[in-house]
Length: 285
Length: 109
Image (cartoon, rainbow over all chains, first blue to last red; front, top):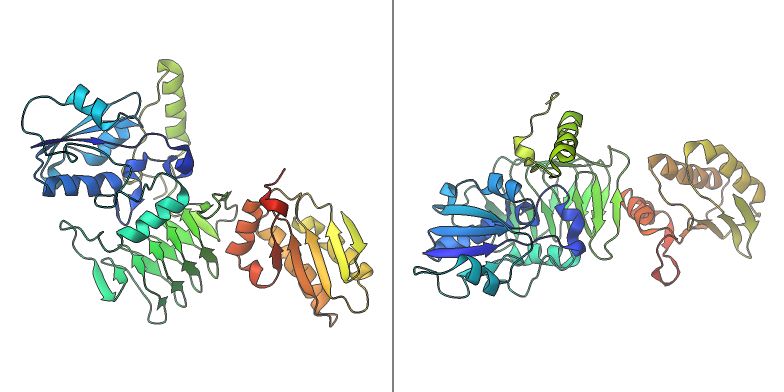
C-alpha cells in the first residue's frame, strides 16, 4: 500500500526550532515527527511512502534513509512549497494500492491521532503536543523506555542519582545524565544525551538532545536546545551567553564546514543540505 | 546611569548594559544614595538589551552591599526585555528580586 507524507515547510511561528534541521526531523521525545508518522503509516499497512519535503529535502533524505528501519520503501521528493493533500494526490497519486483516506496523503503538521494539536502553530503548541504525546511516544518499534513510576519514563542507559526529584509527568530520554539534587518535572522532557548539572530544576520545559543545563539553574516554561532558550509562553528567545548556564554538548559544524557551505552557495547559487548532527565529526571530539 | 531617591528608597535608571566594570560605580552610588531605612530598591532595566553572568553578578554585589549594612529592602528589577528576563529567571534571580514586566508587555525598543 502507498501513502504520501507531506512534511511541514517553513513555519515562522516556530522558526527557531527549525534553524538546524527541518521541523519534521527535529528531535521529539527521542524520535521525530517524520519517524512517528512513518511508524503510524507502516502500522496502517503502508509499504511505500513518498515524503514531500520543501524544507531541506537533502537533510530529510539523509535522516530517513531508504526506510528499511520502518519496513518501508521511501522516496523523498523536493517540492517548492508545501502541498495540500489534494495537490499531493493530483501530482503524486494515481493508480491503485493507496491507503484509504485520509492516510493516503497526510500533512505532518500534527502527530498521528492528535489532529487537534497543530504543533507547528506556536512554541506553546509544540510544547502542548509533546505533553499530549507522552503516553503514546513509546511506539511498538521502541525498546528500553521504562516507566519507573506512574508518569515518569526513563530511557535506557540514563543515570539518575538517588536524590533526584522526578515529578510526573516527565520523560527522561536515553543516555541522559542527571547530577545530584536535580528536580525534573512536572511536565518536563529531557531529550537524549542531555546533561543536567547539580541542583538544577527543569519544569514545564523541554531540554533538547545533547544540551547541558548548568548547575543550580532553573529552566521553566521553556524550550532549551543548545544555547538557545525559548519561552514557549511568550515566544521570547535568548541565546545564553554563558556556557556554564546552558550550552550544546556538541558543537555545530565548524568553520571549515561553514566555509564549504558558503563557497558552494556562492559558486552554485544553492545551499547544500546540512548534515544531521549525528553525522558531524568534530576535530576535538 | 542615574540614581534618584523615591518615597520608599532609591531607583537606579539609565542603565544600557550591566558588566563587571560598572559594579564599583553602581555599588558606590547605591551606598551614597541609600536612605537610613530603605524599603524598596529598584533597578530600571528597560534599556538593557542583553545581560550575562557578569551583569547578574553586578546586581548580586549591589544586593550584598546593601544587606551587609543591615538593610532588608524589597528589590525590584523594572521592565526587563524578555530575553533579559529569561536569563534572570534561568539563574533564579527572580527568587531574590521582584521582576516587574514591561508596561503593557512592550518589548525592548
